[in-house]
Image (cartoon, rainbow over all chains, first blue to last red; front, side, top):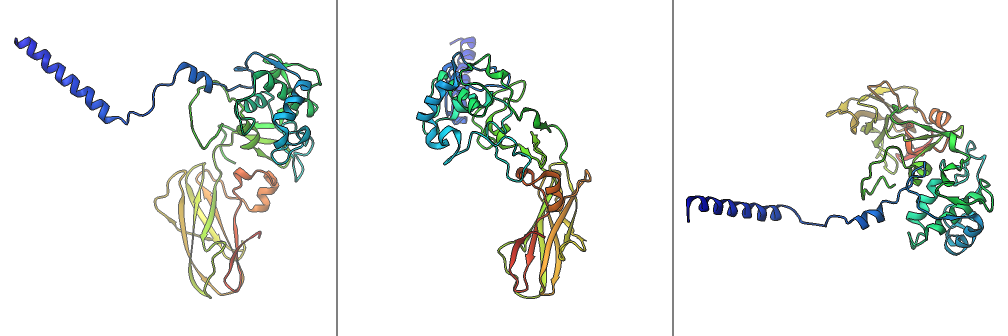
Length: 178
Length: 167
């Protein structure tokens, strides 16, 4: 073995040692997320509508989905019980017993789509098709008197829906505490 | 968005306005408006000993102790009253006294055995003073629960029982 070959052999052994040490020194947990996995998680929808998928729905179609998938927890026509009330309460926010619902409180219609798609139905989240989510969103907007029975809700129209309480939020960040 | 369980990070140019950051962690005020993205916690304190559920074993010398904190800075002063707010005494702060950190205060108290109301009132280095409950409700209504920094009152009955009271 020449001196040069010996030098390379030493380098190779040291490098192998480093590689082994690297494996030992990390917990070696998990694996890089695949593009498909990231796409499955990357489903947030902003108030400007960025992230909304293709598809559409109307309140009339949404009523059917609601009765099958939502009503058991949210009551007939979003009246609530056993879980959150989704409809009504407009005009109560300044009272001592405010009723906060999608219609009376939520500032952005896109939030209905985002939350319903990612988290509902509670027992089987992300099981609704995008068309079903658009339809249920339209139905909840209609029950709250915000859109008509046959108004189509889709990626273009949803961000343009003006929620009744939209202008009553005061953004504090980065203001100092009072 | 959950502020409790972080699962992933996504960088966006503006708030996504998710359900919780719009409909839950916003502070509805008495006039019907709501404060949004109120991240810093306001100056607050509470007496931890004696406090609700404890019983004092007769008149005598006790140590009042509690904690104060502020999202605005460092606690500079905590005052304690045992007569429902007629007279206040500054309670020494126990080091370390650090910005945005729980700060311990202690004060010796001789209980005469009569019904008393204990309160603490903190001030931070921005000059913010913890408000009385009535003042907080006047300013913020009954529903701004996430940022309720009102003064907490403990009633001490003649039999030594300590209970939460509005006073």
